[in-house]
Image (tube, rainbow, N blue to C red):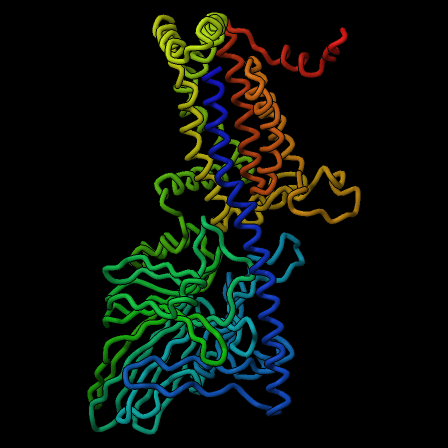
Length: 606
């Protein structure tokens, strides 16, 4: 019974940590964040109304003044009054973007990437659900854009920035096979030629050539920024980073959550000659990869002047262009879904230093990454991520099979000597020290390891956590269907026993969403526990009786894929334990325990 207790306590602790955090931290924080988002939206709308009443027809305020060698501020005034996204897009001239993965446009004012939708991803599992809108014009409350520009001085004259009106030279549509060329010439004889190109996935290349037709050399700086005026309505959890991110210089990975940058206002690591930086969500990201020709200064900042906004940016060292000469700088812009294969390919093919860290694999990446690789590889053969998870469970079981055999064999031997153990407990009931010594002597004589049953479960804990991480962070699992009612393995089971699995049209609180798969998981856990004799201690017996019920409620809020894994793992464990116990000649207590559970207990009078 000591073995059984350790076995189930180990399971309980592994899941309890996640469950407690989920119910008492993640969910309340998410609700609070949603409420805060509503309040912020109301504040923005009230500001718009007040601005309209005070100054009808007002437009976007011009960027703030720029100190020499400083990135010009993104507009921080109130939101422009527009009826919606379409009106905001119609307010400026644009160049269309059309690729197999993306659709949208480039704003010719500032040459900004501020209109981008992801063709292969929708907001919900509904086929008619709108496409994900990744980038949005600044005039909207959800303004979010990437911008490349220059910082000049009196000698350079006006250089391209947020308000520059670019002209299209030739082809007006950006596709993987047709780049777009934009031009701008200022009054000092500087001509800027910008070529936008894009691949079939999510990487843009912005190549800027500065031609100096003047009579003297000029010096200017190149900058890039990803600016966002809102943040996710649902706060990120402890297992995932959302916010400002980058990998530059000797400091390496920089991760700054929205809350931390709001508090500290600015983070400025040392200069770098390689790397990347931007803003990441759970499944999407927008990042900049500066040119390797110029050292640059990265920065992660939060601005409160007028309209609050978050920004990851860089500023290069001076770029000198002699009279009659030209200089070219190139910046890559990633804007899209964080698909593992594509992110890894960009890191390798384009030599982007540690670009794979854009996906938050966590501290245990050495387990999480192989777990994803295994599931993804099996998916390519089976065509269903749910089946891939089931197959992964079998493989994990096979890997731990020798250890599990020893464990269950030890448990079977423990059952054989149970009468002797009870005798020792009764004999030394008042002397725990002698009782423990006698127990250890019994284990030595019978060649039993009382801790053997804990090892398989202890080794399963990293597997459990890594699978949870994979299901939570990887976009490949998002909206991945199983069979029947499970249309998203990364979301909880949508059914509930408390509304008769949808037959009763009533909205239930989150804690009462106990679906079919959590119930299956609870039943398999109950059966697995009943494979062993009922503990003689009443407290332990009560814990073991109610543990499957408690776990059913706790696991109901976890991703369906994780619950399916747990239920299938329990089923395989029951079969494996039954076979081994039969071979060892140990009695399988399942049927007797079930009969005893439902048998009518005699009353005291009887």
